[in-house]
Image (cartoon, rainbow, N blue to C red; front, side, top):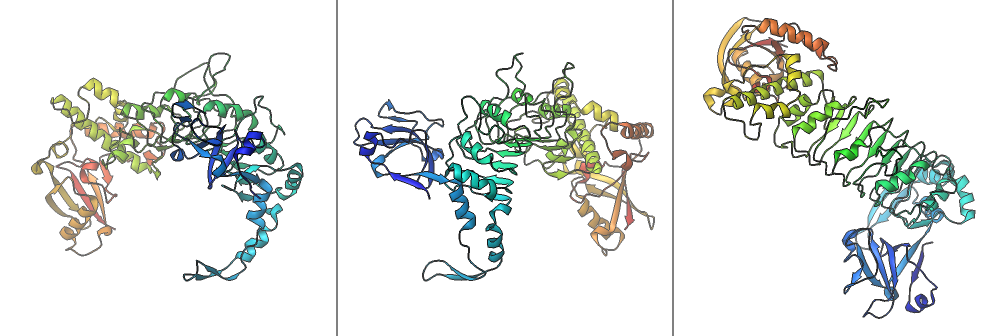
Length: 580
């Protein structure tokens, strides 16, 4: 059962009860006792608390100009009168386990839920099966005991009993409990031979001064550890690393980590050492404000997923090229989440091209990206060469082709504006600035050819300039029509228009296939052939070459939500229409 005490002044005076440093619960809310004793000008004995929920605090340990204790979180402290406070100091793991998994459960049938006058009869199905399974604790593999007032692994007899009862536990959640030290957690984990995943979020665990656990291999089989919101710094993470030789996933978000790296390396390097099997690292919601700190993770040999949202990173630089080291930086990293940071320039986005294996990128909610710009998604794709997934959306080879062509058109608009002395608002003012902010532009020109100067249909707001003079050819009948069409018309509306023109208004909008044929200009044939060849040989383009024929001036308009200007359609071009 939960240990509790109403602490009176006489008991404290005799020293019978000492709670300083203990994790306690008061009215169901968890705190750490930082002070126990008198307060100047107040009668009786008082407890100085640091609440886990900082919103419960009123100060940082001071009262009327005198400091009684210090809090780790500013403003998380308060005082309570000992004689009037019921303090719960917790219970054993075995007590909580039995209550949660061996207590009587309702049998299949009907139970009444609610209070008098508003009860509702609910039919229960499957409770018998759950009860039978949970009654055999030695077969349960996933155990969830968050917020169960657990403060200790129990007596030596409890520990021996857990060797049998906990033999099958693989995943254990002990978040938001009253455990105080890693040594106590080790006593428990050491008798759970199948344990691979341990969740200890919202804990305040002390580390032994000598760094030694009993048993020393208590955490040797752990593959996943979660320590969210536990007031950790990287120094404390580094101290527990030797206990976790097989760790593959580490979730340490919502902590106080601002610096990453070794502070005691003999060669002065700050590169993170150890974590030889770590594949997934979650650092969301910390205080990291420098990309140099992230770079200290670059030699983790198996890291493939790095989660950094809700930090304070403002700029990203190219990965360093150190020929004295055996492997490339972040050699195996395929997934990177940088959402909700402070990244403000496209140069930082381009720097991600230095990651050799990056495929999955999340970068929403950064100042560099206008969330209201419907084209921002495509610009990101074009600027980062190897990604195959952006913000959770899987990209096809055609998506990449369309994005890169659109980006080239966007660059052409910027160049034209700079040369005309009328830079695009928010864009580069000079060609030097353009080249700095668009380092991938030359590479894309080599692949696809240098784009023509952006047509007036893109740069002008006048309606007359946004109307395209297009030649429409219905291939099955040979019927030809020339028509002026807004460059802002999307493909779906275009299909509807074409049905009215060529099918008398009958037929399905989806029943037409549209191919855009770019008007041939001087030098286009040779340039097109070179672009196609470059596409076939370009590294990292995957299956893109299979979608591009020798004539790169032909392209199917197959995305109903895209506008004609997205594809770069210009006046004088031809649209060929086929019946599906």
